[in-house]
Image (cartoon, rainbow, N blue to C red; front, side, top):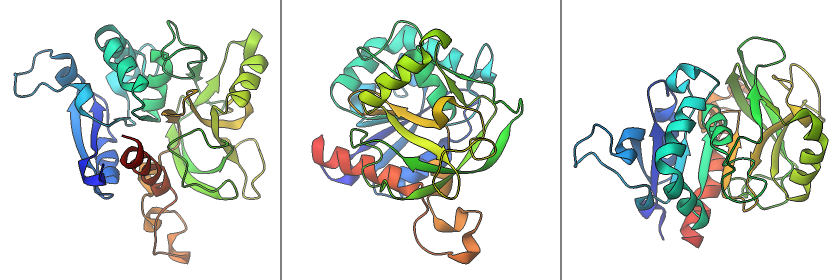
Length: 276
């Protein structure tokens, strides 16, 4: 498959607000993204011409924002809508090896649906984790530094060197990844064994560090995780916001070239062109 044949579903509902940046990140690499409302996949209140089928796409991308106003919990309402109407389609999509990306609110949605961390199977019946309120109890919008710790299973980070410290900005109020307190250490060990931990927050020296380098207080500084197969990936920072070098906060030092977030999109495009 050529990149120009790769169809990307950028899924949105009311409250989503980063779909344009996600759309453009894929389009700039030659793929065929489309902004699709959830109702178009469920067939609710749309014409026949507006209906879409998830199976017609090669990549599913869930962008950031505040879907359904983040009522109940961040991402919970959109996740419930997806799970009630699209569970089979989502499971089939992932089983076929097609990749799913969730950024910020998208990550929250993947956790709420049970598609992450998905310790056993494709989709857990109940959420196995939560993205809770930041330790600072406020919205954190700041550059964050990330280190790749994944050993190779995640299809979204193959173009990121483990030696590189990537600058990818965060903007969230509920980004603290947590697991059930009585099993948190056990779950983290299992995620490490399964190669499901992908990115961690670090300081400028590449070391794990607390606030402000870890903006939310996440367990073990985890910024992003994937499923066992590596084709479902969620992260709180926004790679689509640093597709170009000139959108980095220190861009005047080196204004030209790719931004650190571009490698996420290049990695998954490379995967689908070779595997699907």
